[in-house]
Length: 352
Image (cartoon, helix red, strand yellow):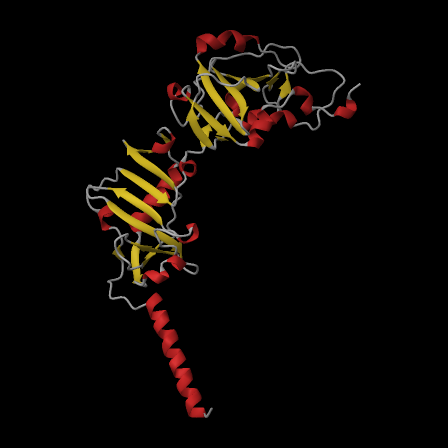
């Protein structure tokens, strides 16, 4: 093969490669900074709901009076940060450039509507004055951008921002079930129906750690702060899933009564069912709680003084009335901590 023939072959190869690159990245005639979904930014635009689908999974998010709720999870509040990220990402996305219009390339950009799960787009339906359906593909690897298209159009666009949306309802749940500050807690009583190891935790004023109201003799705690585990878990307490509370539930593994300084009691029932861990919660008003709160004693035998304080903010994601109709799935680690028996806190080598 002579030099001239070799050069001709190389030129032909370069032409083929250039053609392929053009299909994936042709020049665009679109004006820069053009919004991808301008309807979201129109005056008085109201986004009523968002439906997200991918493969067999789907979730619906509805805007009720300014609060986003997860329809597939009994209208439970949606995760605020995730909603802000999605809506603002869609609203601010601008077209960067036109990409391929060849459907043969949709799979590698995760913009197909059928076929293997790994190649499928995330389908988003926006309920506006006129509904809009869009497909989200993969995000760009070297820039803050996302490949997108419309279901009825093979044309792919690259838009600004890394826009993602899970089709799993659980991923949209507001994660914090309640957020009870330790400063608002007078005592925590853990009851185990199947054993005799029930116990109450209290903390004296200015004390660093929680202690047992009745401390057993001859036993040594594994470490000084070990009794802080349950009270500290009550702050920023997170859930995994939510469901209707069954009429006939399994007997609780343990029951936790959290006596608040305002006189109320938060009652938590913990149940293991089919290798899942569930919690139900109820807030008892002041009249039902005063007697218990007035008789809690510290580890030195002194009665804990229940002063008149402002109502403790429980940081609930739902109202107390709605709370009583639901049950919440929690993590295995949270369940293990909340169901500990008293002997779990002590060094077994120190027992007589």
